[in-house]
Length: 285
DNA sequence: ACCCAGGGTGACG
DNA sequence: CGTCACCATGGG
Image: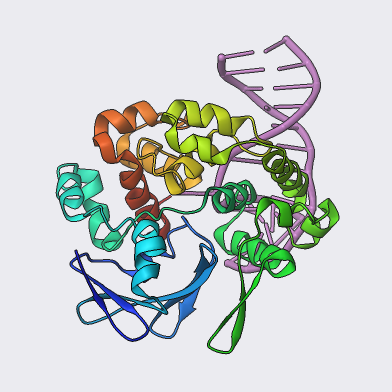
């Protein structure tokens, strides 16, 4: 992996990273197609990512931004080439590689991931994005980018200024009180940073104590914010994958962590994302 | 009108 | 421990 710095951007080379896969696979909700690439807000900054001749161009992006933010956010220390080679050994997973090539699990901020996946419950990705956007517009910080105003995801204190009614108006529905209560719990001292150091199962136990967080949402947070790659979230799409592609009985296709760790090893969570992406894009039913 | 979406909660056995 | 009705919302 090599990085070339230009006037206003940084070009990531040596890893096949495809914005339309990374930003439209259901792991994050704040990026949208823009020109030849995607623009979104993460870590309090607006960033545009698009495929370049030699790799992935990030802009605006200084050398310091790469060092302090994007190297971590895009998990650039991890090469996906060997991982894809491993995936080829599984005949089902092998089928997902073509349509998921260029995938990369992001390392997102815990609070944003927590609230976003509370909203995700029994919801679809389009609506989830809309709800989050309206919440950010209400109480996030304004960020100007190329003449447009974007909004950061609010911190726990700012989100707590919204009432349950405000959240409901954003479209959160019955999840509004869950968001309110969980934001309050973080303000009152629930330590999201402590989970970085916890094992997968201890982290899951901690997250499950928060309102609106069940097993699946906890797995998403552990995978997408804390990089716990043994997390294996099972939603309706993954149930279909487990039943139709791996021969699960429907009643057993709820929790599959043990199967995943035995079957996919250290990269179970990444395998999950390849499978999820494949199922959604090919309408596997 | 009905069904579905990156499910969780609370009640009841 | 497992099961299950119920939960807002909007697009297909």
